[in-house]
Amino acid sequence: MTLKVLIASDHGGVNLKSVIVRQLKADGINFIDLGPKNADNSVDYPDYAAKLANLMTQSNTKGILICGSGIGMSIAVNRYDWIRGALVHDETTARLSREHNDANVIIFGERLVGELIALSCVSLFLKTPFLEGRHRKRIEKLGKS
Ligand code: RB5
Image (cartoon, rainbow, N blue to C red; front, side, top):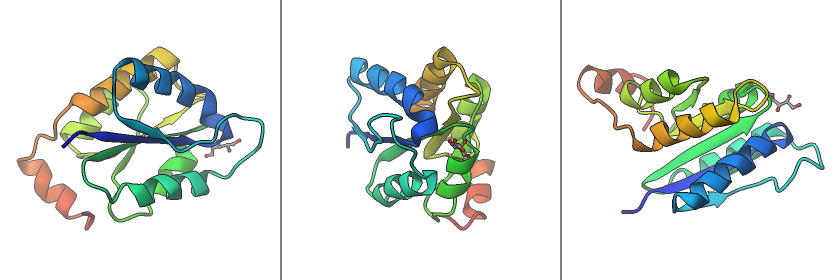
């Protein structure tokens, strides 16, 4: 089944979102941009995290969330049992979020991470497999699906 990527931000993350969307398009990745369209209006990150989380119940989906610091989106999206959201800052944390934590949502702070690093993190997040083994029982202890 083809992977579907969901992406959303608040006004503080909309510029990095458009950079990532451009790359997803160029790479031919199946994605849905859940908004917002621009930074003209201030919006609330819990609303966009909820929008994305509620669509993450579909199989074979991964999510990308961006706000100013990444912290608000991270707190908001991890309230949903089926989400393992990882706030990452570099290629190492992006890779480990998949290998050790089987993260299904990657989160960025637009004001803290450079565009090229974010693009490289997205690429690692989408292609790196979960390592299973000892990491499986740990994610099971999180009580999330
Ligand atoms: C919006 O100004 C900012 O507070 C938000 O994007 C985020 O950083 C919150 O955690």
